[in-house]
Length: 334
Ligand code: AMP
Ligand code: TRP
Image 1 (cartoon, rainbow, N blue to C red):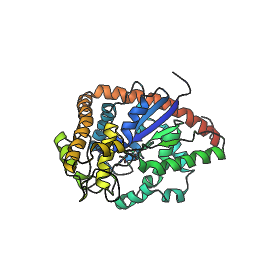
Image 2: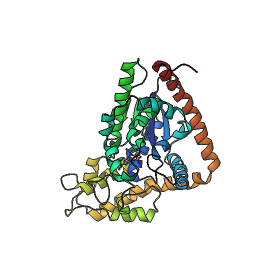
Image 3: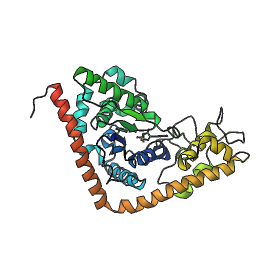
Image 4: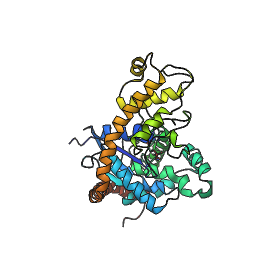
């Protein structure tokens, strides 16, 4: 295969069940990109990030294996792209510390995800929540990634990653590739079905606001039918149409139809018909994923083989960068 292939790295935290937002904003695009011969992709379960919020160990292990199975059920092929747990590759902690020492308090205090989480987790406002972006930068820079496919909410973290790469390259010598975010045009920010001003999130106290990839099919249909809309009747984008527009984005993402085509398709039809179509399209996407997941999760030996071999490949790539960095900053070679 071509040696000048572009590198891709991305990750999701195993912090609970995956939402349709995660799938549409991130995972779906990983699958597309990973099939492209021009890219060499690495996919990570960001478990070291997850412990910035206290986890119940048993539940944490279950979430981690579930997410691994869902990565593959969604179409990631471990033979093409290594899939690994962050905690299995020591290079992340090794570069993470170096980058913590190159990140300013001021820039970390400006991170919106930190400000949000600081409010939500006021009782456990640990230093890891604050330095999270430095570790995320290490995740990316270790692999000399060109492209990082994520949802809109991660764009600020990508900016700080670029700043850190440039800062290090300027202070020492060119070491890191400066990565670009890859944010989808449609579906980068799927909103809550109950409040289209809020991002769809599994931490929403109202479970009708989000759809989980592993929700029972009838529940998914009900949640879509109950989604808030507006007092009008047209299927189109615009001021005051945030609920409908959100459903349109979901529909667009799972059918690959453009927003313009969707407006044309549903011209003159009512919200009820539109919601039925959205529900059907979502179910068509989710059902095969659920079926593959059910098979994969039974096969613990296979899952183990996947994450072990993923960590070996990822570790080799990542350690090359760590060695370079350690030499440049002046650590004595062991
Ligand atoms: P998280 O679950 O917050 O760790 O997010 C994992 C990935 O899913 C990241 O790339 C996010 O940007 C993406 N993501 C999370 N929520 C949404 C959403 N509501 N819409 C689109 N993408 C999302
Ligand atoms: N911070 C990301 C999130 O919450 C997860 C993540 C950790 C990540 N390291 C990464 C995403 C590296 C992309 C690249 O969704």
